[in-house]
Length: 106
Image (cartoon, rainbow, N blue to C red; front, side):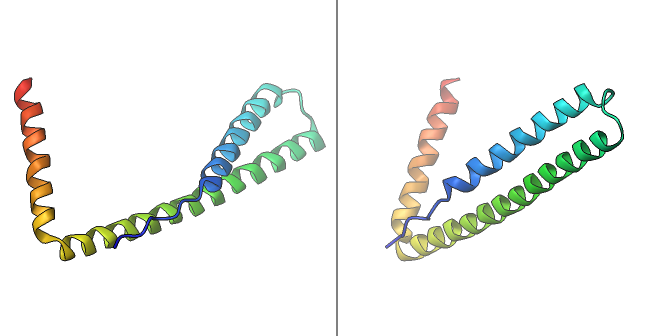
């Protein structure tokens, strides 16, 4: 039988948090960039680059997770179709009829 695909909700929330931080840092840097001098500017730039780098890494990890889950779902679907070909054909036909009826209503 088919197994549920595990999800990592923490990865998504962490990525969203990192992206929000990048946006906030960018906005602050743009607002205060003209007022910063020498060392302050270097420190702000370093902090922004560090946050941006962390967001990029998080995005790459999230992308890898999504690709892996998609591959697992495709394998599970393939196994189900091979194990239950007539059910799959019937389900496909039923979905086609419903979509056809929805299109015909317009």
